[in-house]
Image (cartoon, rainbow, N blue to C red; front, side, top):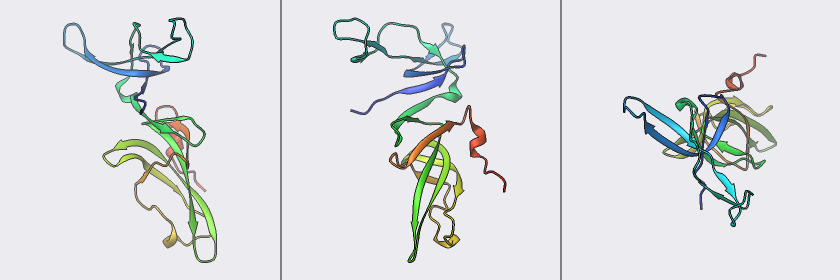
Length: 165
């Protein structure tokens, strides 16, 4: 079964929190808010542990709307990938006489086509002619076996800027 999990930055503490997403209105109905309820880990007998995850009675954490991202998959190092993460995805280029490697860095987004890397910064394979380079588009399918999370757009936006030579 697919894990449905969200994360967001706490509006109060500025820390990341993961769990179930909740959307509600203030008591007077004038303002919408988004909150995350983290999972409670308990054992089958009700004592604390980590054998089984249940969602129990506890406080919701109000999160910044712009920071909410859904869990999509794990990267090749078994780290969770969420919407808004910045990943480095490697690729190989083969020509008649050589093979070279390159990579792309971009933001993970959930689109109608599935999990994709957008806002790409291309790092082309050295020694391969430009017309042989793959993926000149602005989006790529996210491949967990090739991708590594290197940051997120909220804490590491500088990762999306190509370094100057």
